[in-house]
Length: 387
Length: 99
Figure (cartoon, helix red, strand yellow):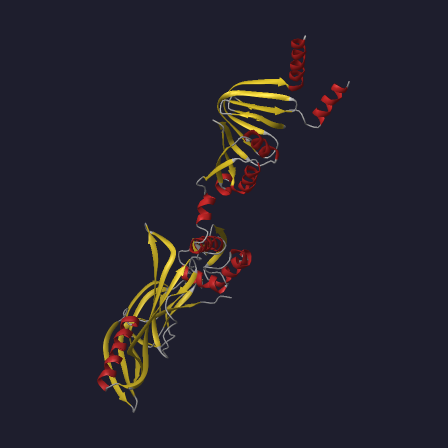
């Protein structure tokens, strides 16, 4: 290694004062290795730095000196000393190594199942921890505690460094099982005004029969029973009571509204993410007042392994805000779609017996009032408060 | 008396010729003053009053600026000659011839 760094020169020396020359080298303490004399010629190897002394000594003693530099690393570097690009490249590589060994290149999240990784990453970003943050700036204990408070559903967080990766280990909260108060004494009351059409009691005492008309809040199944001796028993009243009831819902829409309409102008922005450093490949984002954007991240993959190099492309589409006026048919169509969705979401458990739609039209609005006649469950539990 | 004192002084000041051998491949000589001869089969060195002759094959001497010498190669034989005694013997031989 020393030879490679300092450079070695092979010398051949001959002359009358050869042994004087050898001993002068020895006494002047000039390093020479592998020396031997053969046929009146001294062969040996010296360091490049000693060559000047050897030359002057050879001149003094009238020694004929021949020299040849061995191919070493220092010779190769010296011969390429004017190649600035090479040295600049080495410098850049070394700087990159130094930089990347001190900053976060990737953030790995372990143990999250219900909590999304993007939520944890955005919380970390708020704490100033992202790709490219120096490891020395991270206060691990404080960040762990803050992250636990910032993200719901996390009971424990551990952060540690592995090479140039930041590993965030997460333990999620195990949800408490829902308590079913099946033994709590309660009554069953009517949730709305209805005509009873079906009864089935599992526990408790039925208070109304089929054909009765009940109001909202009326007791349907009593959870308090007493026998002939006056002994009172509390029950968790259970059963199924169906009734026919009416329900009215209004759906309203405006004829004029402001809409975002694409103008057809598009633009894109590309960013190269290199080990956490964001290098823009295009000149800023397009200057649109209103726009919709779509961001795509394409990581570089090698043998199925994701590298910390990715290309982020953001597509922008310009919109203009224009006021449009809908026709009556268009607005009615929209409201009918809303009615369909309402029935699908809220009345799917019931049987719709009758549907009556009335229309009311103003200068700017159209209102559809739907009156439903529905057959469905009207039970709701009401706890008995015992002192 | 003087001889004993000078020997003791040389020992204390580390002026004796120190020799360290590694098999028959390497010899490290300390306090090497002069190289008398240095071929690939024979190396002769003056070291602290001794003339050390080394015989062998493919011998190479290396100097590491420490006043010592490292000899590598296939070492076959090492010979020591006390330089003062040799000069004394030579002188006595010359006297005999004169007679």
